[in-house]
Image 1 (cartoon, helix red, strand yellow):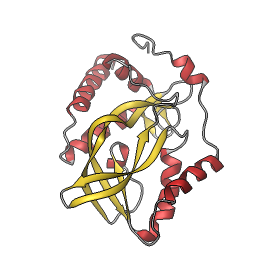
Image 2: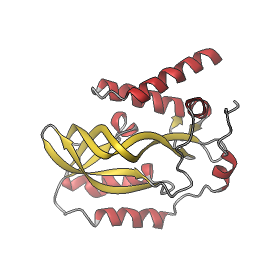
Image 3: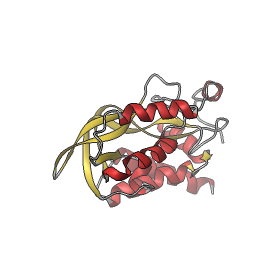
Length: 214
C-alpha cells in the first residue's frame, strides 16, 4: 500500500532500538520510587488499556487528565507494527485534556502489575511514565500515565488523515493488526461514555477505506 505524501519511514526504520532489560528495570524503579509502599495506586488508561488492561484491578473510574490529549503520535515497531512496517499507537501529547479510564491497583499487586505493564508499554522507551493528577466524579486522584516523549524519534505529529489511515491499515505487530487497535479503542471509549469525535471520525474514514479496498 502506498502512503500519500511519504512520511519518511526510512529514518524511522533506521533509528529503531529496543530498551535493554536493565534500562527498562531502571525506568520502572524510578517510577516506583514515588510510590508509598502499602498504598494502592491508580493507572490512567487512554488507549488499549481501556479495553484490554491485562491486570487485576479493584476499581475503575472515568477520569479526566488536563494538560494532555490522546493522539496517534507514536510509531509502533513492536506491538502494532514492525521496524520494517511501523504502525501507530496512541500517546498523550501536550495540550488540551483527555478523558480515559483510571484503574485502581491493590498495594499488594503493585510491583508485579507494573513489572508486567512496563514490558507492554515500554519496549522502546518512547513514553515518559509520570504521576499526574486526574479528576473523577468521586474526587481527584494521582495516577500513573504514559506521556509521549516528544524528543524521541518515535514521535510523529505531522501526518494527514489519509496518511494515518494508510499506515494504520497496513501495519501488524505482535499484538495484532493496527486497525484492530484503533477501532477497538474507539468502540471501548464510546461504550464507556467517552466521545472522542476526532477519533470517531478517523475510524469512520478508516472503515470506509477498508471497505473500498476489500
